[in-house]
Structure formats: C-alpha cells, structure tokens
Length: 384
Image 1 (cartoon, one colour):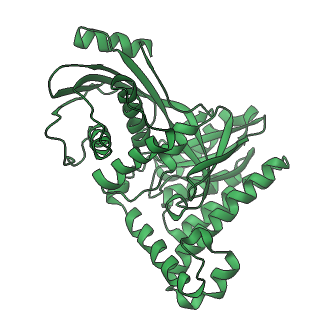
Image 2 (cartoon, rainbow, N blue to C red; image 1 turned 180 degrees about the vertical axis):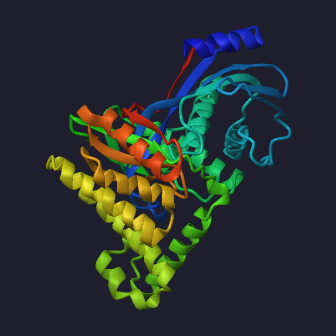
C-alpha cells in the first residue's frame, strides 16, 4: 500500500486521505448456485485491489490505474450510462447504486493498483467495486452493513453492466477469512460458517489464458434456463421457489416436465448445492481426498450439464488427473474461459504447477499462468 500512496501523492501533489483493499475470490464449489439462492463454498485470496482516494471540490473525478498506467476522468453529473468496455464503469456504477439508496458521493482523485488477474475468473470486477465502495465509505461517511455493500456491488453488475450475476463475488471479497473457506447461504444472504482447509494442502490456480467476458457470454442465458426450470418444477412441487429447493430425486422424477436443456442446467445447480454441503461434511471428517473428488465431479457437471467449460479448461482438468499430487480440479467462476483450481499437496505444489503448465503448452501452444494461492482476509479500509 505504501507504493500506491507514494504514486498517488506524486501524481496529484497531495496524499490520499483514505485507502481500501478488497481481495479477489475463488469459488471452491457451488457453480452458478448463488443466483438460484443456493449454497456456495468460496474463499478470498491474497491477491487484491487497492484503492486510494482524496475528496476534491466540484464534480470532476480522476482515477489512475497504476498497474497499466491508464487513467479515466468523469463528471458526477454524467455517469448514469455505462461506457462499453471501460473499467471505470465499476467505479461509476458504485456511485450510481449508492444514489439509488439516497447516498451521495462527492468528487475525488483516486489511484488504484491490483494483483488480481483480469478476466480470469477470480473476480477482479468485484474486487474493484468493493475496494472503491469501501474507500467511499471512509471518505464520505457512508453507513451500510457488509451484506448491503455486497448488494451494491451486485447492483453494479446487474443494473449498470447488464450481467445478471449473483452475490458470490462481492460476498467472498467482503466476508473472506484467512486460511478458511466460507459457506454462504444465498437465500438468507449470510455466511453460515467458516471451514478451514486442512494443513498441508494448497490451491493452485491455473489460468487457461482464454479471456472470458461474462457480459458478452451466455451467462444470462444460463440464468434464464435455471429460472425456467424452477418455474416448471414449482407447478409440480409447490414449495419450490428456486432450484435450491429441489432434491436430486425430485428432479429425476419430474424430468419429463422439462426440456432436455432445462433438465441438464437444473441437474448442475441441484448437484452443486448437494456437493457444497457434502464438502463441508467431508472436511469436518478430515477427508480431503473425498473433498477433492467433488471438484472433479463438479467440473464434469459443468462440462456436460451446464456447458460453461471450454476445451482448454477441460484439458487442464484432464492433466490434473495424470500428474501426481492432485486431489481434485475444476473450473472456477462463471466459466466460458478463465481459470481452473487444483487442490494439491503443499509440498509439491510448485512442481505440480510446472508439470501441468508444460503439458498444457505442449498440447495447446499456450503458456498458462499459475498462482499458488493463499486464502486471505476480506476487504478493509481506513482513514490516513
């Protein structure tokens, strides 16, 4: 953070008055379950976005991204509409969402830096929304509880950007706890408990280098499929409000009421909710190998039922099965590109990652990037 403060001061001629940081996240299990009001096991990572801010007079705002040297300027009276493919949308969208709640953000100079990979499935967008929001909280004395801050970030995605995503990304970034995964219930919108990852194991993130842009992908179509399936199932099972309420047995019995595509989408979501709760049970029993098997099962469901994988992601998971030391692997995040996560023995994590990287390069010609991830704490902010 010291470097960001120095860079900010050198650029603007005055020091920032507040700083904030928000981590990226990994979805461990619970793929596309959040907007179905289901369960998700996730974690924050140590890679984060850092945001420094100083309020200024007037309506003109300036933001510098010190990672790539780009900058944006905008007027607070002219931010109601997002500009396509402009990273400042994630900052302006937070201001617009706060206005809907009767909260005003004044003009500011800001600077940011980030170690969260872009367009990779570690939710760089939620990290930026949350870091900016927490900086606004300190600078403009905004009082919202943590779950409402998560809803602000979701509102940016849903309303400002047009992506009908759930609360997982913002929730994980805000509520993350070091060395533990969080079990979240997205019906009650709360963290039910934290679940430690047993000592001796690490999460290796391997980026397929296939960029995904969820706003332009079939993400919204997948959500429509899930809602359509839930609506039809509610005609048979009156207690069903979302796919979270459906058991695997009920889904099987009602298969004829759904199209083949609706059935497969529902099977993925219902299966994922089941796997999340089973994962917690296995971790409590210290059955890390059983936990890892659920990762492989989850990826196969993504590949076959939800069709949000890619050939590159599939090959990374196939490599995981052949390289010693891996207990499980799957795509993580929205899919359609991005990353796979691999549960490995810590002692051999670096060697494992290099072997998978080499195998992937030989097959695809792509140099996949990898990160051995530590599970980090959630977002923080403070006045200087």
